[in-house]
Structures are given as C-alpha cells and as structure tokens.
Length: 196
Image (cartoon, rainbow, N blue to C red; front, side, top):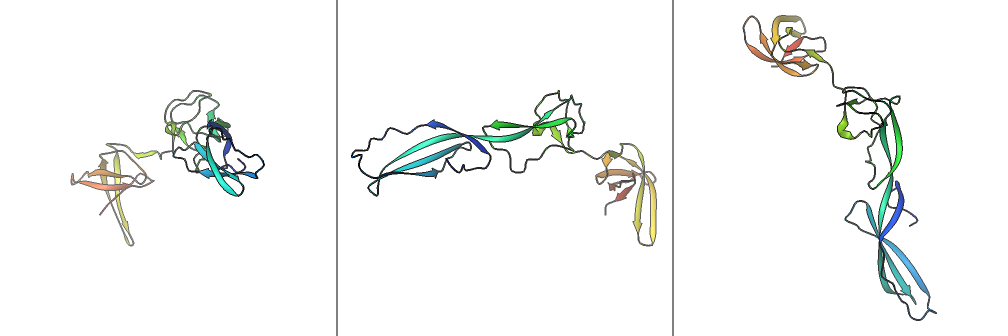
C-alpha cells in the first residue's frame, strides 16, 4: 500500500487473504486496481482489488490488514510519590509500535502531577496523572475576613469558614456577629467575598 490511511501507520500485516483467482486466456491484458474499502474496526484496513481483463472487470478480491501505529509514551525515570510534578528530567518519551493510533491531541504530560505513587520505569497512563490543583487558601473552621468592596466604600466583617476552599471556590461562611451563614467566593489573599 503506497499511501497508508493514517500518517502514523508503520506496519500493514495481512490477516485475511483472498481466495485464489484463476484467469483463463493468459494472453489478455490483465490489470489490478486496488481500492481502500471501509472497515468497522479501528486498527484494520480493507483493500478491494478489482481484476480487469480485456478492459472489463472480471473479478474482485479483498485483503484485510491489521494496522500498527507509531506512538509515543511517557516512561518514569525515577519513583514518584503522589503529587510529584512531571518534567523532562524525571520522565522520558519513548517511541513504540501499537495496535491503536496516538490521540490527535497527545502531548507529553510535563507540568502535570501524579495522583498516586508510581514506580520507576512505569508507563504513565492518563488516569495516573492530573493537573496541578491550586493550594487550599482557607481551611475549615478558619477565621476569615468577609470583604465587600465597591467604588467608594469598603465593608469588612469577621467570619468562620464552614468548608475549605481554594482561590475562586465558593464556600459557606458564618458571620461571627450575626451567626448567619452566607455563600462566599475565596480570594487569593485568603479573604472571602459574599455572593449576592
């Protein structure tokens, strides 16, 4: 096959061969015309070969190929604990051959963190890593400043966080003076802003 269907295809292994075809009258002009056929399986391709003799199609045969793909995979160089940041210094990218193509949006997992302990020389799977989560700014039962700021005025009050929260999270906060519980957005500086 001159032009494989996907650029990452590196091997075509026939898995279903056509029946033998006997053509009578060897003096005729015989031509073979291959066409790529549809396949319901992701890692297979079907090629239909039309046989022409004397300018007309006399038979058709089908060959099914299993496709192998070039693929990259991240492999740990050292042992990781949960929450370790992945970088080019502690993970290498290997090339391998696979039965399935690499996702179109694949990128090295640099900058992500491990979700659990991972041994050295382990292939990192998507469920083993995740994005870096921002640090918790407000802990549960922590005293916080409830802050309302508008052009021309600033109102503050003391509150008690009923939940832990990261910057941008919405948490419940109890006003210490009124004992009223409100919903507030956590700011990066540890203050909270009521949501109206």
